[in-house]
Image 1 (tube, one colour):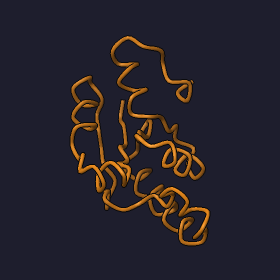
Image 2 (cartoon, one colour):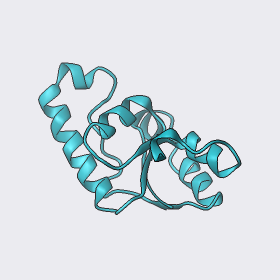
Image 3 (tube, helix red, strand yellow):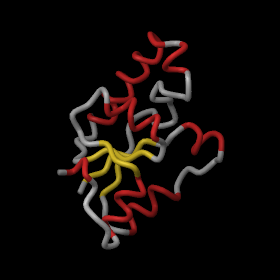
Length: 114
């Protein structure tokens, strides 16, 4: 399954966690692809989408375009704000990274995958 991975700003910039989620997804058998400009925000950023809605919409549109350009079966993210932001702009299922890891190791199939 081809997974487009979105790294939440809080994870990659705040906590400096950049490779572990992708490495784990690869280790359990997923093909992981990253969008162009993967370091850029999806436009959610806590209350940013509420306080700066026009800019937030532009960021979301750009992020969704770059994720969809990878032809994924699913988009994975580790932040609920990002998941909601990206999910509101695409028809590709969006799931939490941990849902995919759980499924790959014997847990239930993520509901978003049908």
